[in-house]
Length: 424
Ligand SMILES: Cc1cc2nc3c(=O)[nH]c(=O)nc-3n(C[C@H](O)[C@H](O)[C@H](O)COP(=O)(O)OP(=O)(O)OC[C@H]3O[C@@H](n4cnc5c(N)ncnc54)[C@H](O)[C@@H]3O)c2cc1C
Image (tube, rainbow, N blue to C red; front, side, top):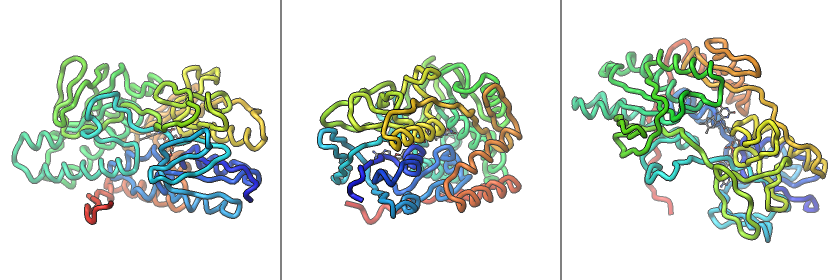
């Protein structure tokens, strides 16, 4: 078995798992290294944050997935990779482990980008990981509880002012979920609160929401949010946030007890010893049409972390979407399995969609844009089949059906990890 070339994949997300399944394991010994021990489904993180699904419903243990191929030499190792030594062909993890590779595939995705705003990270809520989404859920619920307990009008106002910065799909979806809570859950379960007291604002720097989708979808999404009592502010950028007030580029301010930041991502950073890779926009690793990292030998980058400008239809690089990651991983596996750089990557756009609360979504398919209930059904069906694991699919499906008929999200538990014992 040791005669096989060793491929190490950093990241067990959409790209990493697709590679694991598609690489010829008779030819390659494959090791997946991931900072967590599970594969997760980021498109539904906003539902964790709003109590619509359990984290376990959209995550899947990586060891279980790798276990299917264990007899063929596949391995999983948990570890956060920090350094790549291209001279010795070794990667290092945060805890000091070393893993040697013959070929390295970096598929570690992205992290939040705070655009050099000092200390923003310490003050805002984000949705880039399951942990961040759980933190968001706990604090949304805590705010509602604290607001019911106080008679101080100013404090109540502060607790109940939510601002979402970033009008992309994640921003629109979390704003829609908050709007649902305001509209349906609060009147039923928090009689101490008036729903008008809850202020939800979504802020977008350009002139429309969902700017990567069609104009029709942008208009629809804005209307849907209005129906959920969410205010939209377009054409202003956030310039600072002190934990209570957010200030915008036009000088205006808005109270924001809770600010959810969905405004930008940058590639997960690594430090390189030996040769240096070409780094492009958003810290992404520049790759050629075969996903080979420019400037490095036997190192590839796939999915959100890569920047490919060789695809004629996407000269600025591909959108950071799950479909791009999956298709790139398949093409790279094909090329590696066949021993040569045979097939250049060309992204086939199958469409994009976003949901805005129950019953409403917007869908852009090539040449076709629609919204409403049919779009929402399509959104649910596509997301359900994309979740890994039959048990997870059934769990999520049942919880959707339940909340559809009862207007209740049963998962609104405030669960915080104990601080003791302290970990060394
Ligand atoms: C909130 C949210 C909503 C989204 N909604 C949509 C949507 O509706 N439709 C859509 O197409 N796309 C959506 N996306 C984008 C989509 O999730 C990404 O395009 C896709 O996940 C990219 O796949 P990937 O394999 O490149 O990276 P990921 O799926 O992000 O996987 C990266 C993996 O690398 C691991 N990792 C990270 N750093 C390290 C490290 N240093 N060492 C080891 N492991 C590491 C992570 O734990 C993770 O498992 C959304 C993203 C987010 C965050």
